[in-house]
Image (cartoon, rainbow, N blue to C red; front, side):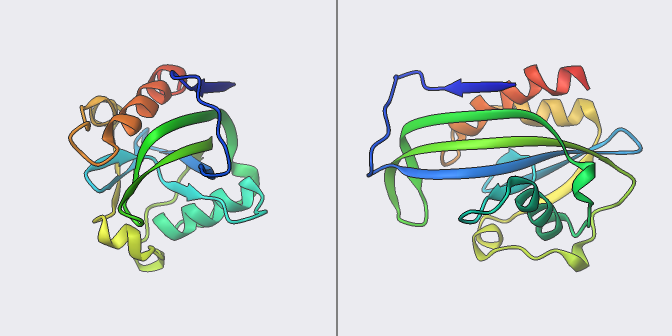
Length: 173
């Protein structure tokens, strides 16, 4: 399934930032889900693909970095592609507003493995943003994802994406 968010019918040009991202909806054997808090926003673990990096390799790498969990490529099941166009995204690294076109692929994983903070390899940005990740039950996860984060930097964009994930993916799991 592919969903496009482009309410202003924006057309990217060479000035736009372009990113490919991957995120994982990780469910453990107890029916709890991994969720991260970063910069006050609730997001699923994952991140940007490196240049020319295969998405499956990227999600495997990101999950290892953010959770310390090693997973095989066959454990990832693609569930959604979300393409977004925002002309007013604040880039905290550049400290300025930049238009951004992002394609984020979401994967579902079921595992019996636990988060291992000893094997995590967080980026400086994640450390600066007070990254925290943990497993939580479905009702708490849904509440966290549907909270209003609009007061946080770029929170309105994360809220919009989280609502889509809840409606299109989590309600069916």
